[in-house]
Image (cartoon, rainbow, N blue to C red; front, side, top):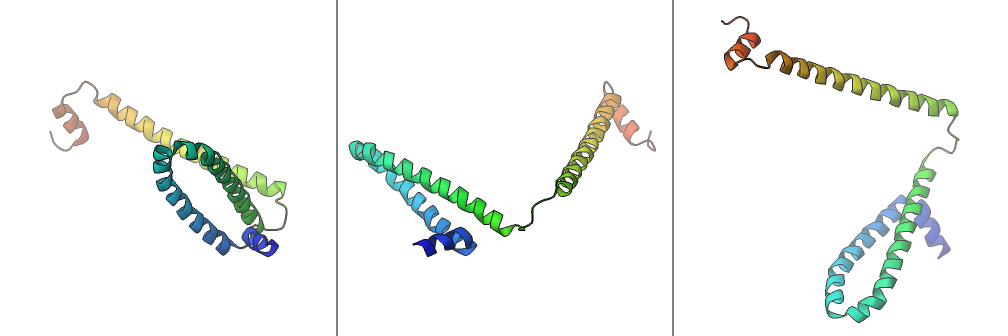
Length: 133
């Protein structure tokens, strides 16, 4: 049992297989749950509590297992403050560039709408095509 748990914690292929099987189990449970609730409500009242508890346990285990897998896949070295600051600066610059680009596009669109406001279609076509009169 201990060997299986160690493999489940560190082997991504085994984790995939476990999640594949459990996703099928939950799909089957979804199909079975509706008739049980309708035709056996007393049984559902008892088994439903157990099912909810088991789902919660599995969800917590799967989340922790995924976090452990991600942590074990990362570098064993601690992340330096320099690396954190560099990543934060790069993210801030990317946000500023995106905002500048979207602001410029919005301003250009608003300016176009403002210049064409109140003019007829003929006037607007002359504005857009200056070579034609």
